Length: 623
Image (tube, rainbow, N blue to C red):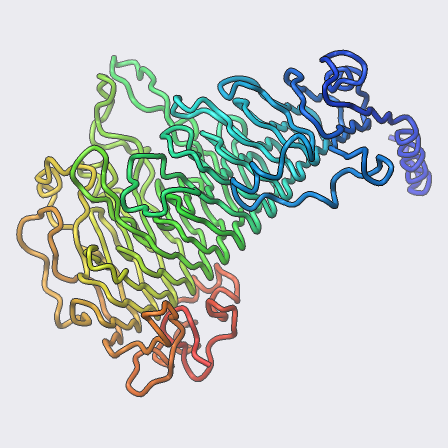
């Protein structure tokens, strides 16, 4: 092959760009023009070439589904009354801050509004090209908002609302990117029943985006707010980033009375596809087909995000969900950080989870207890379903284990009804002993129970086999019990679990402080094997290995006022009571090396630690 000199190649590229720019056409579109007539949006789309621009005047648009197949196209809303028609709204639009703000200020009088008139069908805009940018548009009442399949596409200030059949269990998609190196910036989605913001692929970014729901009906409420996933569209989701984003279920603030009345919602989610198809294995029996077993979602980041009133502020689900990082997330939700179905080696740092509560199970009299961190082991049902008998009942060798190898560093779990949930989910077979929660670590975390006298609190709710888990330099404050049982999904037959014996929480506690609890600080000398029948809500004896733990007063600045910074009071049990630097490296070198320096060496305020000869215990370092 003949080699082209670099200088000549660069000149050729420049000439190509100039030629492309010179041939680009600007299409100006006015609201109210009948579809397919000159001046209408559909007419402009039908006459597009690569690199063209479409300028949409503010107003109401009822064109049929817009499909873009040309590369490097720009669709931008503008205001002809500003700056002699040259304003594209970039300087006058901000992201709505609430549903009422959206309904009151973002309409066809200020920006282009796509109106579908039927939220059970249709897509507003579908892109099947690369390098397409959509800016400054609003859309409502479709089944799907904007779906972009391709690379290097951009959505900026795209607002979408009321998407999907409210009587269907999984309908309504907001804004979706399928591909690589795509961006969403300053976008807003309200009431997308299934998925509000969906990302499939690699190196995609969503920044300063907000997802709200204010619809209290069961299926209209958003299911997945932000979903980064690998599924049938792509086998991997890597190096994606959600930054400075918000999820908000903007209704029913008393969440303890809300269980089952509406969808509780999954906030920031990283998953692999978990539904398995039934197949005939040749023997006349059926089994699940793990066709997505190799899908992965790795090296993704969720940072500087906020969650309000959803069931799971963060959800990591699937055996291929690993090595992801969640940084400085603040949750005001009623559920906790949730890991399930084999999610492993993920890192949570500088996170603050507030106000998890219990809720009434809609199908029984039981109470569901939401914890600061929730470990679920499986999500694939029992041994029979839909009248079909599965192959190899009770074994399921392909089924993922429980979450393992995940770390939580410098995190505060405040006003929680439970600290950690080790759940059997709906699985009451012997898999509770084989599909275990293993080798998870909590470094410098603070667990504070809710002071609500109506709530019986416990550090653990446990019905799942577990091993090798550790708490290091952690504070446990204000819990009624050390450990209780959680049977919300099988209240009618607790003997099913009882047949498999007592399953204690098998944690190790290294330099932890147990303060103001309804039980004495455990020590190894106090531990006796749990005995007696397993009954709902039973309080079992403490198990585990306790190293240099104490029960001195922690010395919070103002626990009643929810200020859990440390005060260096006399005889307090937190300041300089943790591991030294040498001990940290010697005992937990693998955890340190797999993280980043700031994971360990800055506290929840991002201030340097340790100050003094040893780490302070808990999420904050005294200074």
